[in-house]
Length: 163
Image 1 (cartoon, rainbow, N blue to C red):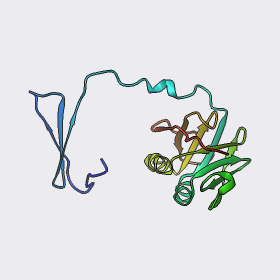
Image 2: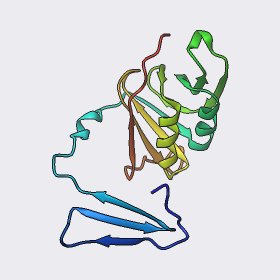
Image 3: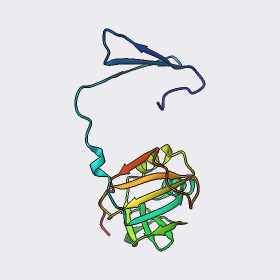
């Protein structure tokens, strides 16, 4: 999808003789995709039933800060991002957030975090957490005080870090 030119038509090729093979052509590039038999992994079990910690953040502010720093700590109504471990931070940035739950420090691979946040179309993101090592669920929202959208859910496993 990232290599597609949105200003040109997409041609889909399908061969009834090979129903598991599909071709895509766009802007002079041809890609194929093959359906593989098997069971899709049971990802629903990775989502927690209850998230005691929620943070609502302006998505663009968060993405900009992540590009500069990488360790994420939630305390009160602030999100603190820092590069390296908390004791060795070389860069630090603070963003105001709407936070419910206990203070928590979570470390993410910045590339994976930016990739997931960039796929959320809404201007705000809700981060739902249980502990610093359990997967974090990301959902978009239109307003800081609106309900979260379930159209796209991103689940990211935090990295372990030495505090």
